[in-house]
Amino acid sequence: MAEKLALFGGKKRVRLVPKDLFSWPRVNREMEKMVLEVLRAGKMSGSDITKEFEKQFAAWHKRKYGLGANNGTAAIHCALFGLGIGRGDEVICPSITYWASCLPVFSLGGTVVFADIDPETLCLAPDDLENRITGKTKAIIVVHYCGRPAEMKKIMAIARRKRVAVLEDVSHAHGALYKGKLVGTFGEVSAFSLMSGKSLAVGEAGIMLTDDRRLYERAVAFGYYERSNELTLPELKAAAGLPWGGYKYRMHQMSSAVGLVQLKKYQEEMAEIDQAMNYFWDLLEGTPGVRSQRPAKNSNCTMGGWYNPLALYRPEELDGLSVTRFCQALQAEGFPARPGCNKALHLHPLFNTVDVYQDGRPTRIAFTKKDVRERVGSLPVAEGIQKRVFSVPWFKRFYPEVIECYAAAVKKVVANYHLLLKDDPGNPVDGGNWGLTFGV
Ligand SMILES: *Cc1c(COP(=O)(O)O)cnc(C)c1O
Image (cartoon, rainbow, N blue to C red; front, side, top):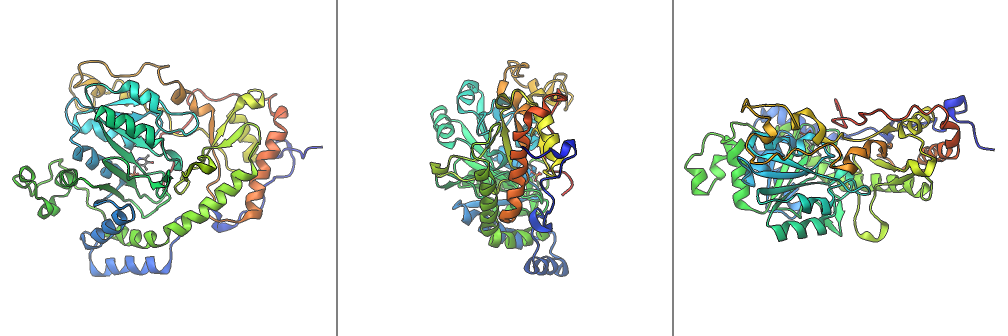
């Protein structure tokens, strides 16, 4: 006889939650000391500690240049300018991501073309990407979504064949390996958010990496007027001293100090997260209705820090039970499940009707010859994904007995799913969120 669901008055399956199981980031003495040094030296707006951080971060990825920024959005903005995105250029981006992956394209006069995601990886779908490349396509943005490396082999082959640049948004997957190689080292340029909710958490901060000197210098010229002395390209030097973008993106040095300490311990922390999350998913192997977004075991690919870990939900294996109802039952068991993920960007008014810069046309098509806006129904996986994923707990510690309780909660709900069908409210029409992490 199955245990009674907590939703119907049974005993909760998850009762004891150690305090440090989820607490993040981990602050240590060395970090406190380094931050205080910056503060006491009055170096908050300097660049010396930032440059050391850039050097170490770039070295970790074996990339030539690193450029710290005040957040990940700024790092993406600089990368796009570095790539030369301008008036009328098309940039392809998956529809399921955080807005900052592509929205900075607007202020450069370019437009975004959205591509669908793959239902298993939840990252850019290579086949769909190929169909969306035109003579105007200048760059492809790849997002390693919620820790999972995108299909870089296929994507890079398409990009090379079509001669289009690749920008990797690595905000969700610091340290992930794709076929043994770090993500953020495949494209011409990569950008990382380092905000405190991400797996490599340093506070409001970001970083851009590239091997391309010209791209790096363009990024510096765009948002770092105080680093003009690094410019060597004649066209940039000739107009140095003011930021071309009109933006000031310098990284705060208290964050750089935190970053230096985080770099020392991230590998170890990531390894513990990996052990914990893989343990959880191993326990659930073969459970109907749910599976992990993680790569196959023998693929030489790894999850990078498991930011906002997701379960792929398969309602067809549970007689169509909605993910909303499934998550209600899990929550009652003490398992913090949240249905959905980032909402599909191509359906938001900002990408359809809003005339941000008063051009007399929606910004999305202000400088394009043809209408690039996607019709409803044209990105079927992205549009249906809110019904087919939910967030699972992001374990920071490998506490096997506790993780076993969480896995048991999932199995308990699955074992009783037929009892949940009766009062299933179904899913809301507008599931998901525009952001995944707030106020941390
Ligand atoms: C967090 C995030 C960003 C933006 O980074 P911020 O540091 O918050 O500005 C960009 N892309 C993705 C996919 C993100 O999740």
